[in-house]
Image (cartoon, rainbow, N blue to C red):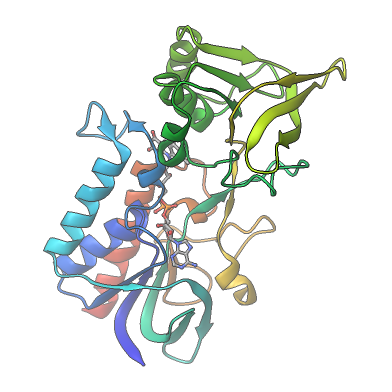
Amino acid sequence: MKQTTVAVIGGGPAGVSATVYLRRALIDVLLIERGVPGGKVNFTAEIENYPGFVKVNGPDLALKFYEQVNSLGVSFTYGDVSKVITNEDHFIIQTDEEEIKAEYVIFATGMEERKLGVPGEEEYNGRGVHFCAVCDGPFYKGESVMVVGGGNSAFQEAVYLAGFSKKVYLIHRSDKFKADEILVKKAKATPNIEIILHTEVAEVIGDGDKVTSIIVENNQTNEQSEFSVSALFPYIGQLPMSAALKDLNVTDERGYVIVNDVMETSIPNLFAAGDVIKKGLRQVVTATNDGAIAAIEITHRVA
Ligand SMILES: Cc1cc2nc3c(=O)[nH]c(=O)nc-3n(C[C@H](O)[C@H](O)[C@H](O)COP(=O)(O)OP(=O)(O)OC[C@H]3O[C@@H](n4cnc5c(N)ncnc54)[C@H](O)[C@@H]3O)c2cc1C
């Protein structure tokens, strides 16, 4: 069984930041990631609110994270963590590949996109229904697409898609947006974005192979209409990925991990950081903040 002083689960901004601080204190750390290091940043077109960058392409920032971690000699392992088990003075982390023993854990698994739950969504997932505009948007160059949501992600990705799509319909269930005003203004000023309010997706229609149209419903008039689009990008919020902790009683009723001001859960030496924790603002800058705080607390204890 692999052994480490600190296991960092999740290689997004929170996990990367924790790893950097731990390695700079020369602490033995193993970064466990089931996908691509960099986390959600890989799936973001452009980031304009991370200090030090006027504007940075998400995958470029993710690559810089990876290079930094690599330069510090961090050990990586690929694995999908299914369970964290507590023992007297250590943890056992179960992945789909192996079991890992660690004295400390920083759980930084982030969130996953919330699904719409409408007919056709599952059937056409990956064949016209996509949750990452940066990854899959370019397949629909020159075509019409639909984005759903009223937050920063929806607006940001609608503007990104508008750069190469024929038309972007941005539909939102109310007339109030959570998105930053600067993004709303940008979307409104983009000629090929049409914002449609008080409207929800009712059904995804396809030809058995790919999406051909979307039926939407006005939630004030109940009137339905069909939009001929090739792809649907729902950005209607996210859910914390904390299933691996479910037996430990460290989450709130929605699954967010509850931590104290040093990012520690109610279980000693089990820390959590980033989007997966219960907090007010989920951004790259707050994720890196959380990871650093958890790491520094661990460095005090290991010393
Ligand atoms: C479309 C979009 C646009 C955004 N734009 C911005 C922006 O402009 N500015 C900004 O500051 N923030 C933005 N954000 C938010 C930002 O991306 C997140 O706040 C940030 O990435 C959170 O970092 P994290 O490390 O907590 O989680 P994540 O980045 O989600 O990383 C978590 C990592 O954990 C891994 N993981 C998950 N479960 C497991 C498991 N069981 N086993 C092993 N590994 C696992 C995942 O593969 C992932 O790599 C955006 C988000 C989205 C979706």
